[in-house]
Length: 54
Length: 243
Length: 151
Image (spheres, helix red, strand yellow):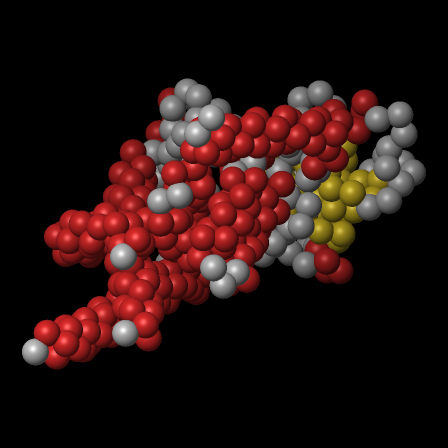
């Protein structure tokens, strides 16, 4: 594409790509980690509880 | 057991958001694909700005969403403050990083447009530019305030007050180009007498706006779910320590 | 009174006070937030600023001419008054591409004794109109082309 001011335009779209995908990626990783830790803890607590009952 | 009823709603929320999330994410991708095509290929250059008008398709939605996110954050803050609902606090808290990113993006793309068009990246004396920078600092201050307090309830209350006080900046940003002489151009879309943007540019702009909205909903839901899970983890760890 | 109602009143009263304070601040700040003076603004001042300031308005149609390749002269107008401007592009750099007759511009500099504004910087202003070149051409042909006026 023969654009005038192409560098400014591409820089804008690059900034958008970096910032938006960056925030989304961090959020997804955070959720996955939290869910993993939560599941592990719940499993452990269930184990403890069933151990108490036994 | 006393604190447990408060997690009843977040659990229901998690289930609901888990169902909405895939759709919101899919919608984000589709809208961005269409929006980017329209912005970069399917729209004409401007008579005066030439192709730099394409920066607008990022800049304007980012700026609008920066304002809308702040208002939503203040509404959640007010709800959390009045009804002491942890989910409202969590929603407000997680609006901030997304809103701050939109603000930063609007500032960066604004500078990238200003440099070739106005002949300057940044002008301190301009009311629109300065009030928008203040918005960025309000977001940062809000996020910092959450980090200051150990107790999430105290943090939520302090942060809510800042969010509500900062609300005054929103009309200032919106009307700055009307009230004062500014380098920044006046509103082109939400103005009396209708938009002054050609339909060939207005449609791509609205598609991009809805792409940003879908993105916002997706990321906010992701973050709220993450924070609900993190608080659950903390509660479980406490239970474990007690056991 | 329930605590919830009490908090609701706090928020309501707080927002009301804030809006009032904002209104006061707005009227106190008033004109100090202006980014530029228009020629009409200058005429209303008791004495023109002696320091460097921003002068903004429309570049008057047909007023741009060059003493030589780099020495630019043009007139800034807002309908109420006009100020002649001189700008040395050799010393201070080329004007932005958007700079054009009939369009908005903001110049930074000092007012000379002869009433000519000696600019050290020229910025172009864009208006609220966005349209493809074909549309402006069509408007110009039909004579409906109206140039945006600066705020």
